[in-house]
Amino acid sequence: MPGPIEDFYAVIPAGGIGSRLWPLSRAETPKFLHDLTGAGVSLLRSTWDRLLPLTGPERIAVVTGQAHEQKVEVELPDILEGNVFIESSPRESSAAIGLAAAILQRREPDVIIGSFAADHHISRTRAFEFAVEQAVAVARAGYICTIGIPPTEASVGFGYIQKGDEMDVDGAPMAAIVDRFVEKPDLETARRYYADRSFLWNAGMFISRADVLLAELQANEPELHAGLMEIAEAWDTGRRHDVCERVWPGLKKIAIDYAVAEPAADKGRLAVIPGHFDWDDVGDFASLAKLISDGHPENMSILGQNDKVIVDESTGLVVSQTNRVIAVVGVEGLIVVDTEDALLVTTSEHAQRVKSVVGALQERGRESVL
Image (cartoon, rainbow, N blue to C red; front, side, top):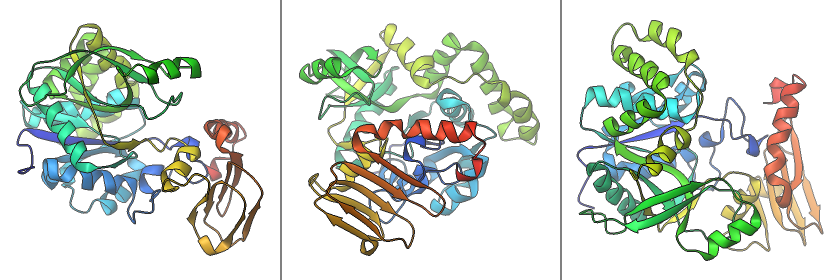
């Protein structure tokens, strides 16, 4: 591509603890701060590097929590100080993305923003850039746009987007109107969606003019919108702290899919670009095992100290962060995550259930390992 997109700003929401990746992902060191692919950099840094050709370093903002501010700045030394937006507490994606949209819209009224998760893995980056370029063209036409991923299997782990009629937008040859959003389906339904090529995985990427996104938020969640606008008005002034302390804790917790995307789809104002690149949300250890198996699922994937792991006719994933020797013999689809203060043993089949362990530890007051 010839260079950064002039009117475009990338927003990276960097929150959540990635509870399905416990005990590797913790409150203080969530998954976006880890190198989970062997690339030598964290998922957050990979996201920054992927967006850089589209924006330049001056037009990337990160929304993150107070506990992660310093670590984000270490991971991203080139980010402008004024482009790190700190949440005083987690309030879900509508508040995080809406806050960034409101601040950036006050600074630059006609800005187009794109929201891209800090903890996803993407390869074939030129195809990613092409999808974003098209989405920006659609956003200029007044639509909210998302990027959907053509399914590679009948997955029950993702929500789905059904694309409808093709659109006629200059610079966006693959754009289509979104017919509907679908929650995570059961396996039989997922198989139907996989066979019907009009369904795409919802990858949680949204591109829109900031004022269009905020108008949709105002129509559907007026109290949340009013609170965010009040915070944004004070953000670049000496009143920021006092206003945030008063307003932020009372903001409604709601995902942007429900507050913005689904209502926009119902009105025919949501578009989708199929993203023909390799994408993974690294949602659990089963997906991580596939990601780092390098196309050889019949092997045992190892993340960490390989010389401490002995494998004999076994498959799955071992994450080693201690000096313990780990021997795995004759087991299929095994997941072992060995950290200094916690050990997880499960299988690929039950990887999604790891989140329940985090809930159980919270109930027992074991915050020291969370």
